[in-house]
Image 1 (cartoon, rainbow, N blue to C red):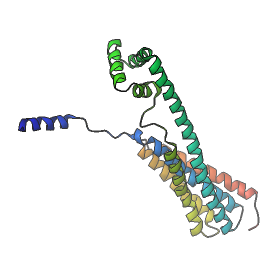
Image 2 (cartoon, rainbow, N blue to C red; image 1 turned 45 degrees about the horizontal axis):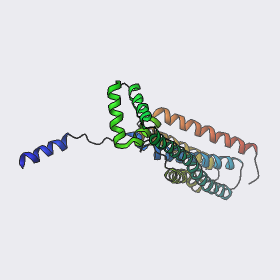
Image 3 (tube, rainbow, N blue to C red; image 1 turned 90 degrees about the horizontal axis):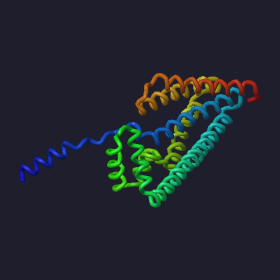
Image 4 (cartoon, helix red, strand yellow; image 1 turned 30 degrees about the horizontal axis):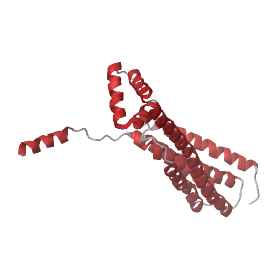
Length: 243
């Protein structure tokens, strides 16, 4: 009994530990980073543009809140429609593949084996691999290796929509808080400065979470944020109105 237990223990220890890959984060991270970035940038640009037109602080605040609500709804709807279209395409491809497997299993086997040959296996081994995988889960094997559809990358419309809306709202709250804190004459520099700092931090965070280098994404996000706010400020100045 002791020997058997020891053998089982060694066998368990010999099994590879599950690895955590950064690609697992792609779905939610993309929606979250995009939503927060858009929330900060669009709301801050809106506030800076309106403030540059010399409207009163209450009007600026109402416009910012309206921008938050409209932007969050737009992000949610856009993500849902976009990712739903991707999901519909995936389902159509899987249905077509399921039918081909039913009607032409030998051809589908050869097709799968050819993929493995292209990846470096010899023909005999590729045939064996294709046979074994198709015996276990033919549709899953073709979905993964022929269509590029996997559990990790499968489209999830509701998740993408909710993540985008929530992250947009959180991002948009940053310039709105600055409107509350700033006086009339400090509003533009405070909103712009705080938003640029948050955009740079968001770019750094996204790069870090994704395992990429930090400097370039940070500079890129900050540059486009500054350009957007400068543009709306210029437009607000051109269309100057009375307070």
